[in-house]
Picture 1 (cartoon, rainbow, N blue to C red):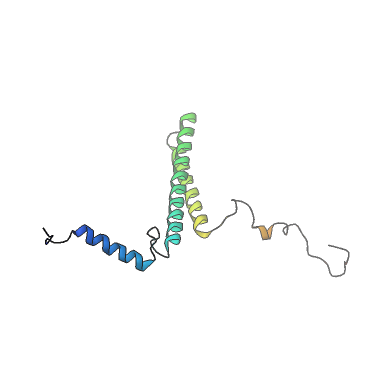
Picture 2 (cartoon, rainbow, N blue to C red):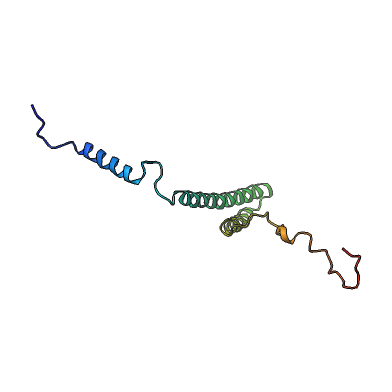
Length: 127
């Protein structure tokens, strides 16, 4: 008996996918040329979000602990909540701007030039 019924739709779909993969290069793990850029962007987004949330939680938690210890409810929690928000915003700014140095330090090209006085033209032995 011959099969005169319609072909299996899943088999046709599989054949079409195989043809498309063969035209594209055959590597199904790569979704496109911008895959690495997309992953970097997602990683930066997760980093920014986590750092902001952690800064707010740590600030609020420290404020709550100080309030319990000193009995100053709710002022410590409120003040340290806003300090946590500020620290989170600073962290977001530094991540987006690409600033890689620690807070409070000067850039490496500026280190060592703050205490040096300008060299006089008449003083040749000064280095």
